[in-house]
Length: 191
Image (cartoon, rainbow, N blue to C red; front, side):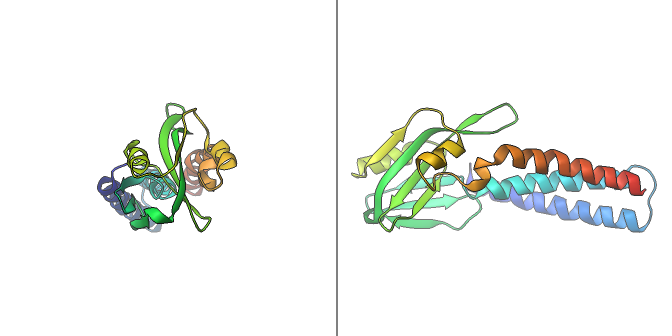
C-alpha cells in the first residue's frame, strides 16, 4: 500500500463524508423533496464505511526498509517508526496472510519483528524485500509460506495480526451492509 496515495485517499474520503453530512443535514432541515436526502445518506454511509476500512487496515500496511543498523517502518496512516537491528530478536515473515476482499481471500505479506523487550511489531509491506534485507544483515527470519488466516496467525505468533483482522468478516458484514441498510431505511421511514 502506497503511503502517500493512501493518505490522499483518506483525506478525500473525509471531505466526501463531511460534504455528504452537510448535504444530509440541510436536506432534512429544509424538508427537501425527491431523492436528495436519501442520496446524501447513501453517499455519507459509503464514505463512512470506506474511511472506517482505511482506518482499520491503513495503519497496518505501508513501507518497510532495513539497512545495516535499523528498520524503518512507514505505515500508511501512522507516524514512521525506527527500530534498531540490535533490538530485534527474530522475525516471522508470513508470505500469504489471507485477508478478505470482494473477490475472496487475498494474500498479503506480513513481517512480525520480535523485539528483545518481548514486544511484537508488525507491518504488511508491499513485498518480501524487507525480509530478504533483514536476513542479509544477519537477523533470524522464520518464513511461513503456507496460506494462513489472521486468526491462525495470531494463535501461532501472538501479536502478528490485529483483533479487527481476526474478526474482519463480521466487521465487514456489520459495518458495510447492516448499518447502511438501517440508515437508509431510517431516512425513508422518517420522510
